[in-house]
Image (cartoon, rainbow, N blue to C red; front, side):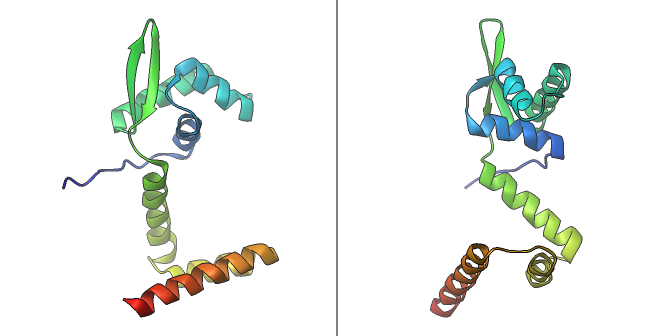
Length: 132
């Protein structure tokens, strides 16, 4: 089985990818409209430059439909999240999950619902560990 290579994408590239993951295939103009709905300062030329960059990185594919480029993701959002999360964890917390969780729990006010969900996730993980 061939390993899928997931490119690293920049912060602004994430915004473009989110617009395409949300609804695809999408023309460049559709992507620009979606970006401008969230942030009206998006310039069409910037968006088109980022689309080209994402194609070169292998994150997007495209086809010509008439005179328009229509884009589709070549990588799953979950795969990109996994790569970015691992990179962040390695860079900032030396790859250790416990200090990262401790930092976020201590520095952000979590709701009761968020705390309950975190507890449930940790308990589920502990149960899986015992069964292995």
